[in-house]
Image: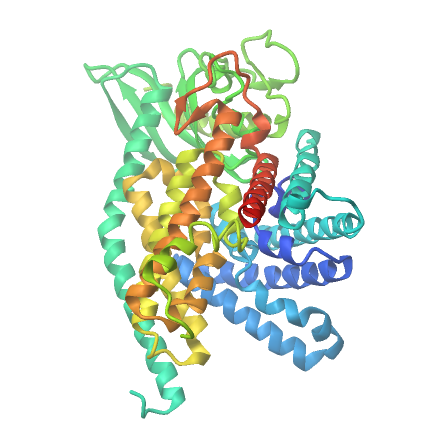
Amino acid sequence: MTYFLLFFSAAIVNNFVLSYFLGICPFVGVSKKISSAVSMGMAVTFVMLISAVVTWLIYHMILVPFHVEILEYVSFILVIASLVQLVEMFIRKVSKPLYDTLGIYLPLITTNCAILGLALFSVLREYAFLESVVFALGAGAGFTLALVIMAGIREELALAPVPRHFQGAGITMIVAGALALAFMGFAGMI
Amino acid sequence: MKNLSLSTRMILVLTLITIMSGAILAGWDLYTKPKVEYHREQALQAAIADVLPPYDHYDVLNTEQGYLYVGKEKDSTASVGLAFMAIGSGFQGEVRIMVGYDPDKRQLTGIKVLEQIETPGLGTKIVTDPSNKNDPLWWSAQFEGVAVEPEIVVIKNAKPVNDYEIQGITGATISSKAVVRIINDRLDVVQDLINQAGGHK
Amino acid sequence: MAKPVSLKAEFVKGLWNENPVMASLLGLCPTLAVTNAAVNGLAMGLATTFVLLTSTLMISTMRNLVPHQVRIAGYIVIIATFVTVADRFLAAFFPEISATLGPYIPLIVVNCLILGRQEAFSSRNPVGRSLVDSLGMGLGFIMVLIVLGSIREILGSGSIFGVTVLGDWFSPWMVMILPPGAFLTLGILIALVNWINSRRIAA
């Protein structure tokens, strides 16, 4: 039950994109078409899951026992950057169709704050191993959800008469604000 | 350097960068760690002062179940109450609360939420509620004098009637209930400790 | 370089024409997350500028040394190092700000603004010029954070830099200090900047 709450909280109530502002860059950049939003979401969730596992192990098996918590940020970002590279190479080797769908998004993921944010939040909240895995899944699902909803709205928006100065980033932010408002409604639910 | 092979250069440069980074961080860690810990200690003392009635000094008891801080009068025998840290998970993540407890009257003398990451604007009202301008701390202030028996209870959408009741926060029921649950759980442990020690000190 | 650009031009471009947030939409995560009060925006802006300047100093000094293939790895180690320095500095000297900004300080590591400047400028320009460019970008970033933070604080809490400016008659718009307020304010601000730019071109 707590795992369910944790998942639900990370995916919906405290959506990574809409209430923590993590992963805004791809949210603005890659959310023009639903199909690319789904691919990006999958790629991010995948990397999140792996990096949550690896950063948890590094923090609790190496940094804490050796009292070098000061290396947290340096080691986390190095791990994430190398993981993204590894995942890219692995996918290219194993599945060509998968690489064609996810490939171009992978390099963007290194500087996606959602991945590092996830690792930092897990440490800060002192999650146990399984909790951080569930947290990663929830955060990934939430990221994908926000991206897909946004892409759906933007596909419609392409046909709408948006005021000239709001075109592009302006209207995207306004729509995101409306979405964030809608998602806040979930907070009272529990 | 230019006439070295590419891979040698790559390894050399990355090693150099890593060594520099390590040196900077090691030095900075030595310099800042005591300061960070000093602030943590200050925050702890301030929190204890916040939740206990006025005291002259406090004794630190290191028990198997964590630290207890016993506020003492000037003559050093009579205690004004004891403070302890209660930690548990709220809606979003860990919540740390300093709790003041009067074992004689079996009521709390105050609480202070030290760390939380609840939903901004809703769950964070367990610390301060900016919508209540006259008394932003109204929620945690309710705990002063609340009875701990049978146990502290959160009630929704109503004013408390009994002395063991706390009014919940609209829109943040989980956060309010979590704080009370964390306190109740910890109180059980602390009360056991007191009983084992043969009544209160 | 194709044509020489004056140092002043390198500095000024970050303030408006190539403003990292308004023109390039970089560093949006901290821009939105910490601007619920002006002072938070200022602290975040200063921390980011510190990291930007120190990493620029290092990276442009070493620019002819670092092989192309490992530059990104080198950059992120350097950036992460200075972010840790900034994070510890706040924790040691400004514990309250450090607690408020929480994980958003370490997230400076992945602020595209910093890596972007290293990749686009510091890795191919002399130290002095790179520092001027970074200073301009940093100030442009701080400016946006303060403007955004002030608007949200005034409307959301009736105060600015913690000083109450709107009296009791004003009932704060809670939504402004909550996440939706961040998106709405930035959206309107971007439209405003577009409007001003289009007027400048027309004039």
